Length: 202
Length: 202
DNA sequence: TTCGGAACTGCAACGTGTTTCTATTATGAC
DNA sequence: GTCATAATAGAAACACGTTGCAGTTCCGAA
Image (cartoon, rainbow over all chains, first blue to last red; front, side):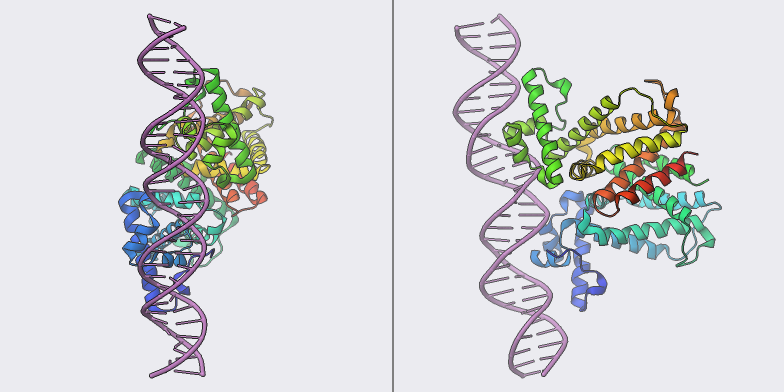
């Protein structure tokens, strides 16, 4: 078994990049309609107009597939938000702003979020590469928020900032899991996240 | 499908309590030997000397089974530790003491931890009841540590303490997941947890 | 243009979680 | 002790992730 998904850069031909795109599109469409369970490999293959074997060539498991979809979603969002600095006067305000946006975005599509979150949480060591990509995106998003105007692309954040960003993303993930599994309402989730940010950023 | 596991209190006859115990014993033995994948329902049934259908009567899914096993483990540990107050002069010291103990305990049996942690994170809404039990156990453990000598059984902790306990358990869970999935070493895990505690408790 | 290898298709098969069904056994009311 | 009911055993069947394979198509090098 291959252990890594084919990333966009690996793929030489335009046809291949297009296949990859179709597969991820199908994944997100199915996830959005019925959540984790609805993302069935045969269904993804069919909807992406690709053979099952090919799907497995691009993404060696359902988890790889979903985590890669998450990475792409994240990337798209980051691209859209662009380089605009995060509004807010204090790190705490900015982080809460960013998380509130992100959380609201996810809560707008509960099924999709459920699928992506559960895949992320279930991922084992073979998905380390893909997970790492998502982790980086999350960290950079939070660091931008913490720094605000002062943020400079590529600059090393301090150890303290890294630690803070990690705690926040841990809390955010747990909160998302609680929400996804119906153990917390959207309001409780938001509130919990904001409390935690207040606790860590002061 | 039933949505809840049979808890020890539900079970009238001694034979039934014993079946339940055998099932959980088998689960833990298999998990300890080969992790999540080794906990196969047929194998659990056979080792517990119970028919597959009976196993499903007691625990409606593999996830229910594993989360219930986690709850029992937690309970046993809490019972053993007993009412002894947690050593340490500050909340931070006490919490770190408790977490270090717990983490070390789990890292001593990586397979078992992997199985239980992944089940916990993968659980969906139908496992809410069982998850809630574990959440309570975790919270009460942390609150005891935060309060130290001042802890009184059954007393309501302040909102602030609840928030702190929750942030810590979120971080702890995420760290455990990172460790279990091979994304972090035991040392990194311990260090990350302690950094987070230092950040939140001050 | 031709050729060789990689990529793709279509399909069958396997493993494991889950469901279902029938026959058998234990349990509790009377 | 007898009977009704629930619980259990045993085994087959289903669903879906995953693997394997034979045949076909695509693509770059010569």
